[in-house]
Length: 104
Image (cartoon, rainbow, N blue to C red; front, side):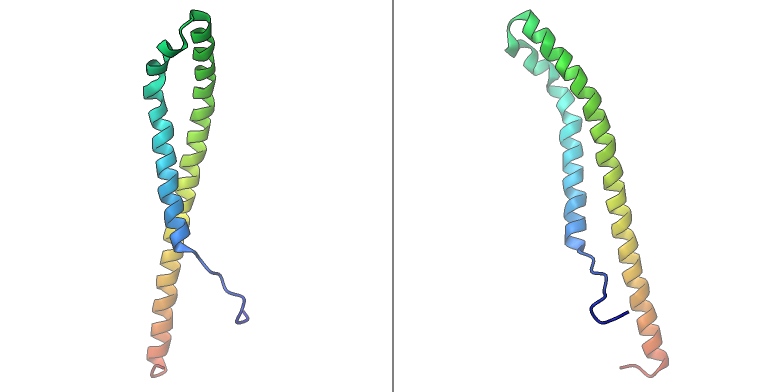
């Protein structure tokens, strides 16, 4: 592998992605709690009924979106842990190799 052919892992990006995905999940989870709060805002029963229908459809899409966010969050977490372990393994192997050669 040449000098410029390196894998660079942005740990800060992975950590912030993990945090952002967690916050998105919390926000999507909390939307359900506000459903009853807005029912009275619509006033007329037919409008309120249509909005209830919309919210029900949104619930289905939100569930799917939540599943995707959770899956992505798990993938980010797995990637982060894997890269951290790989870094540690490479460090240990490098130190072991240097120790056998008398170290530089």
